[in-house]
Length: 494
Ligand SMILES: [Zn+2]
Image 1: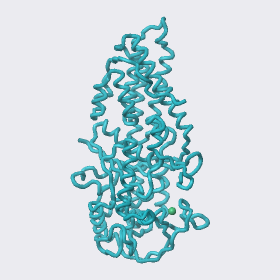
Image 2: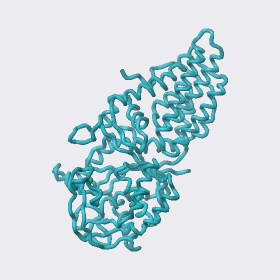
Image 3: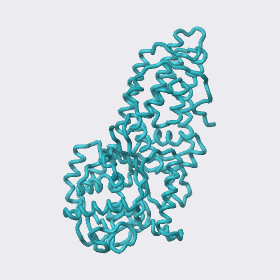
Image 4: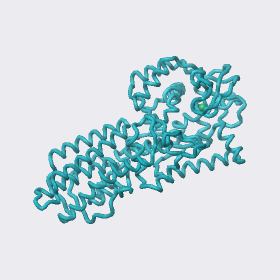
C-alpha cells in the first residue's frame, strides 16, 4: 500500500489551541483525508512540545508537579482536536521515554560525526520564542518583535550544531526543489536568509533540570527545538519506520526557519532523508487585532464550531485566506462565506436537483450535456492538481466555480418550466456534476458530502470512496435515485 505522512507542528503545551492552531490542523487533516480517499495508508501526527522552560514556569504558577501539568495540558489539546474531528493517528508527547531515547540517539550520532562541539555562547535569548536572537532580529528598542520583551543576555558554555557545514547543501536543496516550501514566496524568504550566511547554533543549556540530557554530557539538556523537531521521526518507530521521510510538514510562518533550515541540516547530520514538502501558514488577527490572552479575543475553535454549522470555520479559513499569507478573522465574513458558498451556491444546487428529480419520479438516467461534461473534467483535473500541490484554497474555489456553472446551466434550461425539453438530461447533467463535487470535497466536509451522495442514491460510491477507491469512483458515471428531499444540507444563517 502507498504510504503518506503528514504532520502538524507539536504545539506548545503551556497554551490552549486557538484558531491559528486549528487552521494548521485543518490543513493537515484535509490533506490526510484526501490521501486516504486516494487509497494511501496515512500517518498523521500532531502533539505537544513539552520540554520547555515555559512549561516549568506554568506548572509552578499552577502549583502542580511538572508532569501532572503536562498530562492535564495534553488532555486539553487532544480534546480540542477530537472536538474538531481531526483524524490524527499519532499524538506525540516529547516527555515520553521513547522520544527521549530517540533524541539522545540522534544527538550522539551528530556528536560522533563532529557536527556537535563545545563552545562559548554569549548572546541574547528570548524565552517566549525559545530562540537565540541576533541584534538584527530585534526592534529598535531592542525587544523581541513577537513578545515585546527584552531578551535575556546569556553567557555560557554550550554545545553547538555545525549548521555552517550544511550551507551549501541547503542552497542546493532549494535550488533543486523550488516547490519545497508552499507557497513559494515563503521559500524565497528562506533562501534569502541562507544567502546571508548560516551560523552554527547552540543546542544545549547548562544546568537546566527539565528536558532531555545530552548523552555525552549530562550537565546539559538539549535545546528544546532540537528535541521538538525530531518528534516527526521519533513518531516513526515501532513498525512505522516506512513512513519517513514525511510527505508534508504543515507549520506556521514563525517557525519556518527552524523547519526549512535547521531541520534539514539536523536530519542530514543524523543520516535521515529529508521531508518532501513544507506548507507554511500565516498569522491571524481578529477584527484587526493580534490574538492574545490579554485582549481576550482568542476564539476557542471547538466552542465556535458548536455555535455555527460545523463546516463554517474550516470553509472560511480555507477559502478566505491564501495559505501562507496573513489574514484578519471576522465572524461576519465567515458567515457571509458560508451563506454564499455552501448555502446559496452548492446547497441550493443540490436542493434544486432533489426537488426536480422527485417531480420526475426520483430515478434519473439520461445524457450528460457535452459542455458541462467538459467543465466537469476540467474541474476534477484542476481540483486534484491543486490538492497535490497543497493549494487547498484553489481546490475549494474550483469546486464552487463549477457549482456556479451548474446553477447557471439550470437557470438557462429552466427544467421546472412546462415547455422545457430534455428535463431528465438536464437533471442527469446536474446530478453528475454534484456527484463529482461531493466526491472531490469529501476530505473537506465528510459528513455533508456523505449525506449528499446518499441522498442522490449513491451509497455505494460513498462507501467505496471512503475505503480509498477514489480512482474507481470518480470515473464511474451512474444513474441517480432520489427518495426524498430532506432538510437543506446547508441551512442559510440569518
Ligand atoms: Zn520572542
